[in-house]
Length: 169
Image 1 (cartoon, rainbow, N blue to C red):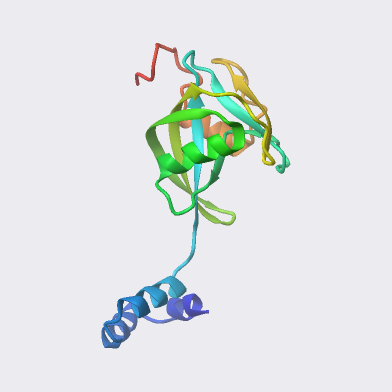
Image 2: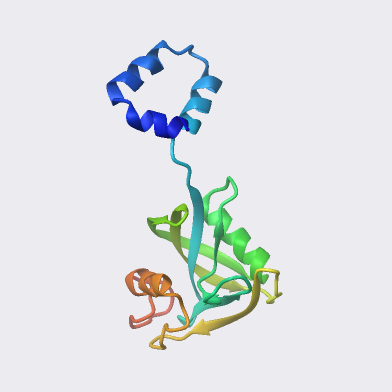
């Protein structure tokens, strides 16, 4: 409700009211939190094996089950969140290499942090969220992925590039 009210007020009036408020940090944080749009922050992994194969997982709860490994952050840094999600959902260990982009997804209000990572190894263990894993080889069709994830792979991935050992750009 505060968010809707704040949207109706001119910004000059909001700043004036803000200045009149007690200098309580807790009160100001609370009001800022209540008056602003909330986002879920998530990570999406473009995780590559040494040979350039792209890791995909079969989700147990999605209409299009095959997709890129992903998950919500839990008050943690993006690299740590992706490592945790992969470990929890597959048993694999990864090394995040680079944040490729941060994109807004409006359903729900979500910020997705796209991260390129290297698959280090581990033994696959199915979880309540992921039942299987597979790889998409360089040049192979991306049709198993949802459309939005295909565009992520085409835009940021190594999928259709000539591979060299490692992640040279």
